[in-house]
Amino acid sequence: MSGHFNESGFVPLNIAVLTISDTRTEETDKSGLILKERAEEAGHTVVEKAIVKDDIYEMRATFSRWIADPDVHAVISTGGTGITGRDSTPEAIAPLLEKSIEGFGELFRAISLEEIGPSAIQSRAIAGLTNQTLIFCVPGSSGACKTAWDKILKSQLDHRTHPCNFAQMFRA
Figure 1 (cartoon, rainbow, N blue to C red):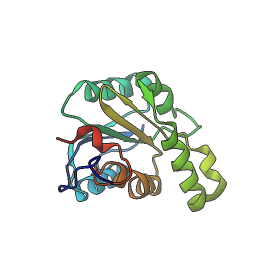
Figure 2: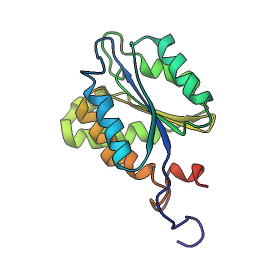
Figure 3: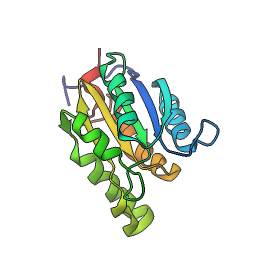
Figure 4: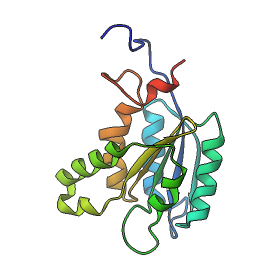
């Protein structure tokens, strides 16, 4: 494909990682650590990692701060996407999105179906774009974070991925 993609080297993005949990701490946050490590291993910069309670207003405050920061290209959150208890990530984040990326949740559930069977239906993984910031919300299990990064985000946050990717909007 000529002209559409820059064939130069990797272009790192600035990524913020948010764990949404009422119980996790920095010491017990395996899922957030997986996302941070995988993003850094891929060559991206993790500009901040935080943990907030599964509270709609705490989530919105943290997401909004990162969305307003022009140096944050993407936010990846883990947790709060289920259907039990205080799971409220989709309800907190959906109103902040200018554009939804429905295909992210659909693809995540399709891949998860192969890994965990029909339990994948309980995932409410969502994604979108707002203020030129990509938002990805994935389940809180470490397996779900590995699936989301390894099978979707790693390639879609790399501008060299053909025929298209999310990272192309941030290339220099």
